[in-house]
Image (cartoon, rainbow, N blue to C red):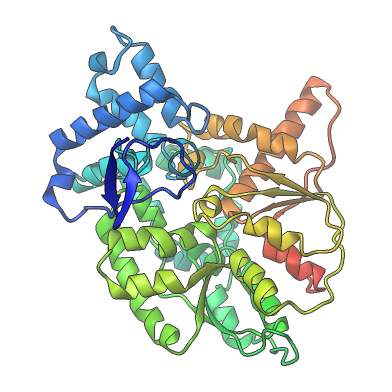
Length: 470
C-alpha cells in the first residue's frame, strides 16, 4: 500500500476506517479560489460521488437522505444527471455537528480521498455569504450579543411574546422570520451573567485540594444572556473546590456566523476574544468555556480559520470545556468530598459539539462522580442542530430526528445535556410525545420535567447548592 507524508509522518494513503484521529486542514477562506463557483461545484461532485458510493452516514442527519434521494431519483441514478441547483437542499440540511467527519466517514484525511463534508458545506455557505444570499432574518438572528443586550432590557415582554402559548405573537414571528410557531425559543434573563458576577463573588475554599488554581470563565452568549444561573453555579462549584475565577466575555464565539458562512466576522471575533484572553493566560489562568459549541470554536474551529495567529493558538491550547475541566480537577488534584446522591433516573444526552471535541464522554464522567447515580447515557442526535431546527421548513424533521432521544428520556426525572438548545429540544419532544400518547389513548409516561439542566447544575445540586427555576 502506498504511503504519503502527513504532518511529517508517513501514513497509508488509502487506509480506511483506521483508529487514528482524523486530520483537519486549515480553511483556505482568504484564498480567492475558495469562492470560485466552478471549482466548488467540481469539489461538491467529487465528494458527493464518494458519499453516494458509501452511504455509511445515511442515518446521521437530513443532508445525506436528501443527497441520496437526489441521486436515486435522477434520470441515470447517478450524480452525473443531478443538476447543481439541487445541491443547495443538501447544504441547507447540514448543521455542522461534525459527526460524519468524526464517527462515520472512512475517507477523512489522511485518506487520499480527503473528504471533509462539514467544511465543504461551510465553503458553499461562504460563497452564498459573499454573494449576499443569506436571508436578512437569519443574519439578524445570528447577532446574539446585540439581541441579548436588547432582549434583556425587556426580558418580560420578549419571553411573553416568544412563548409557544402566545398564539398570536408566535404567528406573527413565524410569518416575519420563518421560525416555526411551535418551536421552543430560549428565554432571556433580566441581568446578564457578566453583570451578576461583579457583585456575586463566591468564597474560595482554601482547604480544597485544588486551592491555588485560577481560571477565567468565557461566559458564552447563551449563559450570559439566557441562563446566568448555570454560570453562577459553575463559579460556586469551582470556588468550593479552591479555584479562583474571573468572568471574561469580549463577544460571542461566532458559531452563529459560522453557520451562515460569514468567516470574516468569525475571524474578527476570534481575534478580539483571543487578544483579550492573552494577559490572563500569561498570568497562569486556565480558560473555561461553558457551552460545547463555544468550546469547539475556541479549541478547533478558530485555529483552522486563523492557523497563523499565535494568540488564537495559545487560547486553543489553554481552553477546556467546563465538564472536561472539573473531571481533570478530580483526577489531578482531587475534588472536595460531600457530593450527595441525586434522585434519579437521569437522562444524559451527549451533545454533538461535545463529542466533536474528541475528549471522551466528560459529562458522563462528571455525573458519575455523584454517588449511586442512576444515569441513562444517550449518544444520539437531539434533532435541534443550532438554529436549524427552529425554522418552519425543518421543525417536523427536527422532532422526528430527536424522537428516539425523547423516547429514551421518558422515565427520567432530569433531562440533562451540555448543549442547552438540545436539552430544551428534547423536553419539547417529550411534551409532544406525551400529547400524542394522550390523544391516542396510549398510556403516558411520567410527567414531563419542567426544565432541563446542564450536568454542572446537577453537580452543584449534589454539593448542596440550590438551583432555582430559570
